[in-house]
Image (cartoon, rainbow, N blue to C red):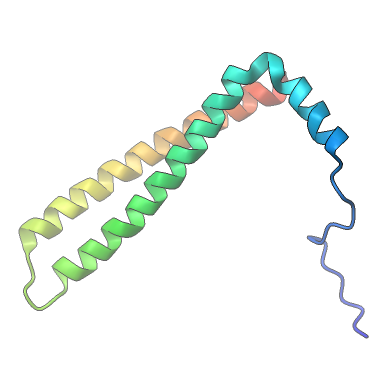
Length: 102
């Protein structure tokens, strides 16, 4: 039998009482929590869109019928999406800090 131990393994269970206690503590700050969750969802969407744009850049810019106009447009969208995602991450960090102090 192996003696290997993974610190990531959780041996304790989360009880329903713990979840309800956390929700009760977060209730006065529900707007902040909703804002944070919305920013997490937007960040996930932006990350998925970046993956799609990378595929488009490879398919349109490297493929045999290379379309430089489409590649340029995909690069512009890629840059704008990265800036948008950076703003989202900044907002998430701010909200996490505000919620952590309350």
